[in-house]
Amino acid sequence: MPDQNSGLPCDRIYDGESYLWVKPVTENENLHVGIGSPAIESLGELAYLTLAEPGTHVVRGQSIGSMEAAKMTSDIVSPVSGTIVERNEPALENPRMVSSDPYGSGWLVAIAPASWELEINELHDSDSLIDLLPVELRGQYTNA
Amino acid sequence: MSWRLLTERAVSHDRGLALDDALTRCAADVQTPTLRLYTYESCVLVGRFQNVSNEVRLNHCETFKVPVNRRPSGGGAIIMGPEQLGIALIIPVKASGFSSRSSDLMVQCARGLIKALESLGIESRFTGKNDLVTRRRKIAGLGIYKPPGGAHLFHASLLLDLDIANMLRLLRLPFHCDDEEENRKAIEQRMTTVRRELDQDFSMDELAWRLQSGFEQAFNVCIEPSPLWTEEVNLAEKLYADQYSKSEWVYGNTISLRDRLGQSSIRTEAGRLEIKAIVAGETVKSVFLGGNFIASDSAVYDLESSLRWHVREPVAIKNTIAQSVARNIQGWDRISVKEITETLLHALKLSETLPNEATAGACFAREPAQLT
Figure 1: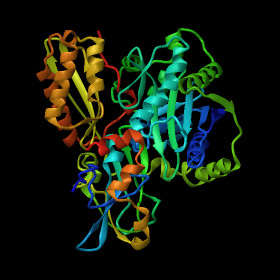
Figure 2: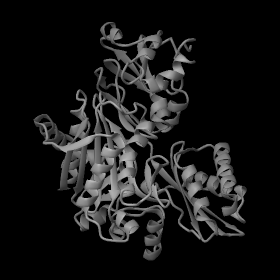
Figure 3: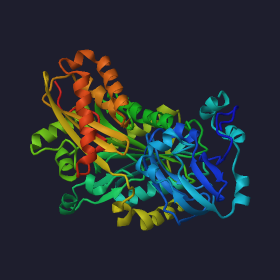
Figure 4: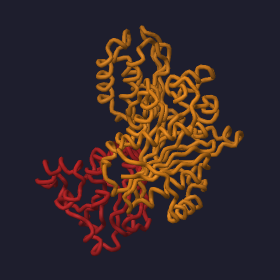
């Protein structure tokens, strides 16, 4: 659910550089990863998306895919280490899902974490993410 | 404040791209932006997510020994050579004075080109997804790329001149037909060059100097020649060896989503209207209007621009067309919103069923094919 102060969902945590979100999935202890709205707002609509295949071992800070948005191409940098167990195939066919529903149907990958207890300390809750946002992206969230 | 300046001429496609990438990756922890102004040996460069065989006449490239490579930045296929200026601005995360929002950053960086052209008496403006246009014709293409942990790379190619016959030979263009003269006209209607705008000879060295000066004015900085750092040279060599010299990078299938082409036409009171639409998933990448219909230059320009990178949703498309026509009501005499909308939606529907993949040519999506 969105944080009443920030407008960002408070049921997940965020990477402070890429603004990717991480949400534990309680039933299987995997983590869902997606792109937070500050990044979407900066990048514009997504047109192309690639994601690493299930079974791929990933390391926090390394690429798990790439995207072309309206104004930029970039790699998608994993916020956690582990193994990709699932990727959002519908989003690969329709990357606009990521732009239109970034916290729901537009998730990217599910990861079985390898160092979650350590890496959780490097991520941020929605309130503290606001403090990390550049001024031009911060306004709309503090005013939400 | 001062920036670094790097200048080169006739770099190879693979080493040229590798150095841009290396400069960007090495700039994560520095504060000084680097401006690189350079030309390539003759080559074709496709965008990050393009399918090479869709965009490039590979048999002709092989015949004429023109190499093909893939940029890390997005956008359409382009030819590069001694008369196209490559511009790379590496913007460190810690550099001051730059927006952190990509859309604003693109506009900011475009100002360097706009200032340079302005100094030559050429008025230009940034428009749409990534074009710099003058007199409603594209004169430069722009893009931004950010590697993991690196800086932002602003990429641009500015046309000092253009060998249209060579472009037709090497690229697959969406408006291509059997009549070479018509093809040439279609490109001239969509693109222009510095020499064409000035109507006189003009050197690449002078253009590069104007670019340097344009960025200095736009950002109120001094840009000074600088050597490459050892770290940059070493990483460029590694990226050349591991990525940009590899056929897997150039020809590998990078996405499951393919561009698709749909086309449809209708006979109107103003003449025959042909619409070609290039679609990627739920995104209409670009729309081309052709045929012998009568409409004003600005009306068709506005419609093509408005539909570029547009969501593929019928109601939204209809609204966009209606708004564009309303803005240019004088220019659409005897063609209705309904006729345009139905023709485009039919083209989009056909794109779902036709077996062919699109000849995308997304870098030429500005100007109408038939103007009056």
